[in-house]
Length: 497
Image (cartoon, rainbow, N blue to C red; front, top):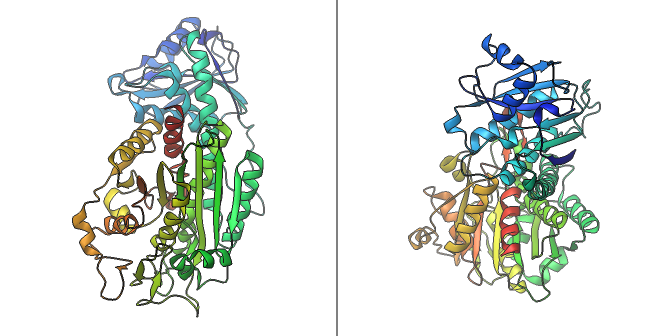
């Protein structure tokens, strides 16, 4: 999809469709007023008949308005004007995308980007318009023998209207940034949506290598013998039950100064999680193909920052394996030794994410990172705590936590800062090893983060538990690509600091 930024008169746009807003009470936005005047109040006449009241997300398509060169005019309800904020803008944009897809328009001019959104500038509106359009265009049907037919022409060109000519350059930068982030999100979603028999650890490594070649990212894949030499006992313990060989995928993006400390991203890459010997219930176990969405988000973020050519150094590390119940699988009660030398008593083999992550978190010490962020579908307890809206954020450094929270607010890929107090560490006690891999049920997402914190003493660290936000269930089942947008904004801000 091709995006461009223009200013000028909405009523003079020659396009397949011009999109304008209507607030509740049939109050026309500035762009809608201009079109209404050109059409000799044709829009007002239609609204007076009760076809659209301006309710948020409601749409009405008008054809061949007199005095307006556009083939169609799409009216989009913006809700109450005084309540038109970020969430309302995104809802209106989603409704716009859905309505445009139902038309035969191959190009459109969006004038919602010049509607005032509380606390947000034009750049923000442009970025989220592009993300909404790219999200609406996303399809995953590569595994269907006959992809669904679409008799409508697809939307190919979108003009985003800004109020002033002076805003065009900044709008173009925002559109380019959003396009890169959207491509990273789509890459992460593609990987997450693939089933476990397609997206194996080997496949994930191959995709990283291919992405690296295309985007100029150095990629190295460590094999089982390499992991044994490194002493990654926890990672290897999880991999023991699977016939698929484990892979440690290491990506290095060099965009900053040679001697600048990198930011490290670590993504959980369990390409399918049965729970191991502590077998999961059968219901919805198919969704455990999404247990590598942390890895997918790191890959997507690496692609996004490479497309943006950010002046920053970033390392991405992905421990990839399956968690299977085989004859050689780890058992509850087993004790294994981590790369750090700490020993872990396995009380539940379904708490495997923290086992692969702890060795990866030790591995990244070699880069002397300025900050480390791990991303993982780690705990069901996180879903109970925050539902499917916010990602859980834990950190040993409040400044880093604030950076990520701000990046989430700006990208609208939001996180909530959870506690990581010393008192919670008391739940992690073992009679037979340095630490057990689980605590009690109470505060399960917190004690999981406490486990990881034992391996992050050497650097500022944050942990993103995306168990509730990495995918959707039900009729819209599929990976979301979160938190690629948050991580991308976090790295953009760091690069420009």
